[in-house]
Length: 478
Length: 100
Image (tube, rainbow over all chains, first blue to last red; front, side, top):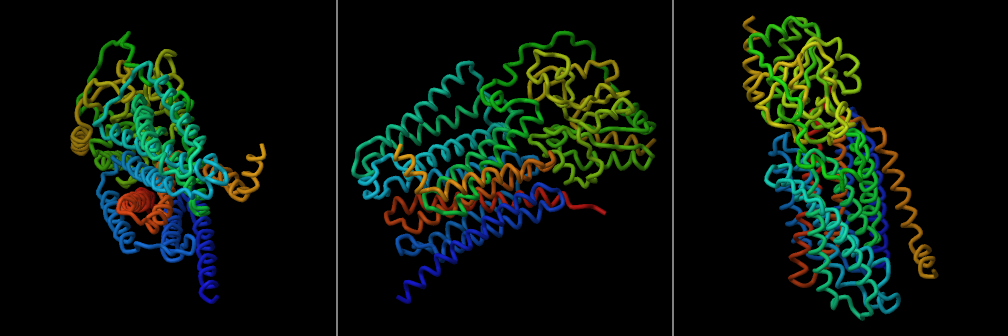
């Protein structure tokens, strides 16, 4: 009797811990959406997670049985912690988007594995009573499907952002994808209408479903262009959230349920917000083929005019207002520190320097802010594109560093352009434009940029870091 | 029809939690400035690492070698998601410190 009440006390404490963890997740997410509280919010959510994990190991009971294999569980956690910590600390800030994608994939894979292991253990009593079409089985199957898609898709997104997987664009792709999705739903219906005593005999179909889900995840992300990758990662992020919530159904576990659903819905909203920032619909991102192989918008062209370093230095030093438009090229060249040096130098000379940050500059919304913050550029100097645009006609010089699509006037002028309608930084309205670029290559969306041929534009070719370094030296020697 | 109604009655608490959580997620996120999109995505990414609880439960009741191996893998991957997610988010946010 005593022992029994002890166990039920343990369960109560476990449930209370889950409530606390859920509250911490919600508070953490809320605080994460304000710049001042964001860091504490993240730590708060992490505490919630640690509580939930410890309480589960110590207090969880399944049919009165405590958690076994504790040593192995602790070893697994130790391995995951060490590897995760090292990767998260070592990876360069420019590689942040693919890192988020990678960790997201790990969560999806864990959810899929749980489903695969739980399927053969569905209780025969439940099947005898309700048949295969019950909520328990559905949660397992959906967890398997969504988790696997999220894992496979995240790995492809990771590979694409890291540059070792290219885009695959075939027109028929969306029909193939829709067919595979139909097959997956068909498999779920097939499994749930089987008349069996135990689920073990259906395992081959589970493996088949896993394989088809992998194929779907790969093909789902393959045709999506690099510029849309952040949207896809955010979407896959919410997928994993839903997959985790399926585990919550399965174990009747409130922490998994709230955590998973919260991320699922927040992730979906975040995805929609990102699409809005690029003025594209979600459907367009998923089925629409971005870039379409660059249908030769090279018409017009014109002449490119270069500028010497000395001229550029003089122009900048005697300007009143300078706006820097940083792009991924700046980040790749690791030139954010030297860029900040240039802006400090100019400010000392009495030039007003601002950074114009496009919502999708870099590889993810907000990515550029993180990179510039790393280089100690004060927060107040970073201006969002909507706010800076009215100011640009009064700006003496706009320096575009390694950015391309976000200043491309085709977004306003050319209805046939794939980026038509995307809000841009209207660099062409400034009095002078200096474009720093490695060469005449096209941007991430693979389309021609008429800004480079503008009469007011001067090009400064070369690697962003060394060009900026030389520019700094020139300005100093003036 | 009976089946659906029965299912609803049986799981009504869960269904309530799901619906409220969906609205909560939307509400909590809707007013986030664009500069925080990346850290927020990363933070949310860490939170769905809660799937690790399921991995621990599975591993804790695994009896065959096969399920031990898979469970072990699930716990490792879940931990990677949790630890990596939170640490990366913290690293990003560390840079937003006010400089005076």
